[in-house]
Image 1 (spheres, chains in turn green, blue):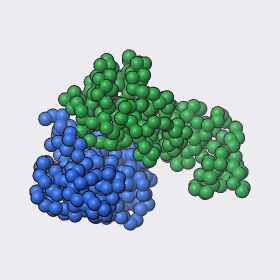
Image 2: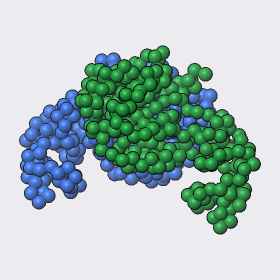
Image 3: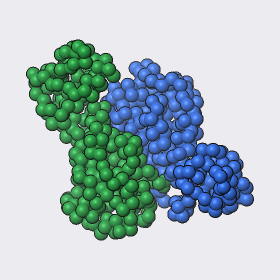
Image 4: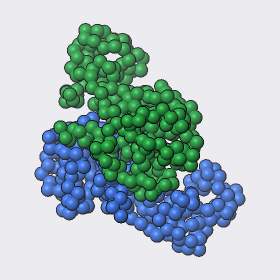
Length: 255
Length: 255
């Protein structure tokens, strides 16, 4: 399964369908990356993947004057999906959001869901930027699938359509209601099936939003320790703890 | 203990000693931050701290023409220390290192220790940059102490002087020796007393370094899941999991 890391192939995400014996044209950014950054040459091998068709051992066939074509030689890894684990977050600014999206992708999130909150500071979202950060992270790490991105909507709408069989783990770092929260490690692992983690905005959810969350039958409030974490830190920490206690790190351990 | 967040005081780290009824002169960067960024005025209240003397309710006394002086009125928070938890890491480049140092400070590391490794890409370290990232993070979060920074030295020297009573938890994301590693949650919590976490460089430790780590009596190898994490992600994830299972988030839960 992790053959590609063992044989140390450069991993490249492409949008088009992949199949054996197909030639793939690369876009300008990919050409620049392979040619100028990585100094790849005619005959260099790569692993191509698109999030759907698995991983393909591929070869650069022509590299004269920055013109690349890649030959998709052989499928060497079957497509895999990440653990079903969602992260809902209130968008934050620029660089910290880029970092957060990269990190949670590395940590194996399967869907991200940007949520509008009264205290959120970002009103418009650049989906292309979110996606390019995810692509960078899946190229970097061992996963073959790209997380889904849900539409940016307000908390009430999110909760109104919430699937009943999915636990919503609430991390509200404003610590407005610390008595309700317990540590994530205390969640009953038998009850944690499908899950989603929601991270509040930096100022915390509004009292109206907290009430909506409290009234909802699927929510579990947890605490991320005695310090107040920034929301990007909270997202990365919560996903790490979930994965190690209930997610695919835990399952890896059991198998 | 977390009074300052409840009353929403701006937190400012200063280098000088603090005591009640003392006037503090701020440097140009601090003046700029308070005056131009936060738009503070004469009479505005702050929380001053220096990592040693506790937290002081303070008041801006004169703010005409960008000339600030702050009056240290009353000590309102006793000095606290973070859990004794070290992080050893092989320095990475620029922005990702800044980000990592901020995040691990938020997560409560008590000492950071940069380690030279054969596959490390950074040969010289800017201590002032490390420190300013830590200060930014302690101002942001609820902690009153600044993590210590140990000298940049090679792994052999680090291990040669290793304190026998401290477990060294090894996260080597190269996955070169996956069979040795178990999940961090499997560590025996009775045995985890004083601990340090060490994160390998992006290419993994060299075989010589792995041997040095394997032979050392204090090391425990752990895995951070099925994907290969970048070393900054690994540091943040490992600290989060340690804190929630054995560290001060866990103790908070017990108390």
